Image (cartoon, rainbow, N blue to C red; front, side, top):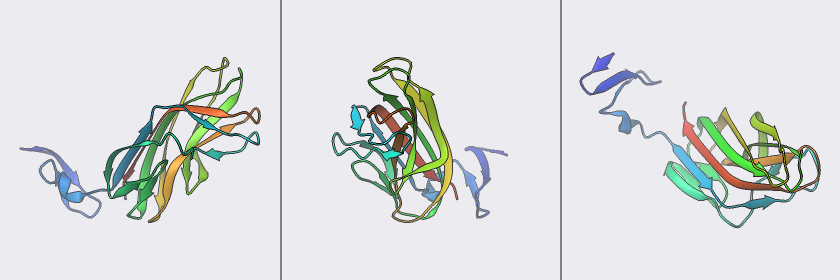
Length: 167
């Protein structure tokens, strides 16, 4: 239904939502990104590794009821979250098969991940994914990467992560 101030609908609790009161819902959300190379050491092939390289830090984007540390977003309100991510990965060897996903408390989530084969040494592949997960207060959301082919380091040259509470 259209209203004078825009579209309207119903929130999950039956309250009417329109453009004049949408800010009253105060949904938690967060965003972080990084545009500087981070080398992730890979000791064992086909194993997930959290991107927790101490330097350079990721950068906080917009945050609301979500906190940020050097490499993760931390949940302040429990609930079901929509999580989207994107990253650019490279290795020093052609034909490495790599993957990227989000990590919850340092453990890779298998619910959604991007996967590709790097065509040439030092070439970049872009990976992205979306998932919906139930998260608890204190959960830390970060990135994880995997080299299926060999125990060869992965360079994360760009990455972005966004979360928003949906229920």
